[in-house]
Length: 115
Length: 112
Image (tube, each protein chain N blue to C red):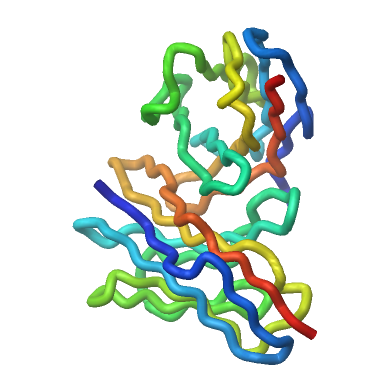
């Protein structure tokens, strides 16, 4: 069965430091890949997505992610973290069943930003 | 920018009662979804809906759950007889072919 792993439950970084959040998936083919961010009590906001093509994708708020097929990974990066980036980050994978796909989410990584 | 809306934002109900959670997807979208997130846990897929029928459902989506698109705009999730373990945040999402899913802000359901 398909699965998504976010190995880091909680990460703390200092403001201005770089950030990398890890995501690995298990699936037989190339899935659709997403990163969503959730602030406390809020909904899910899409940061970026990968469907096909260039494996380095740019998203909103200065985030980027790189799809590495050989490692089944889609890690999220930001060169310089801002205090407003503190939130929970979810990696999600869409496994296509014909024209439809549902999302399978990782357990999330909570990001704390120290001043 | 178009967005998915959900009502109510918070629903409190007693165990055994029926609840209906409402969603207005983005107007030209064709695929509709419900997900739930139990407090402190990951987001889980419940059901997908396309062309006026369920296209896929998870093990969670048992006979107590149903979905409906009663008109051209609303998409509802009904829980017939709520249980304590149904307490969660419920998210609606919609999309068009080849595009990402857009999520609503969620409805927090509390079953007492």
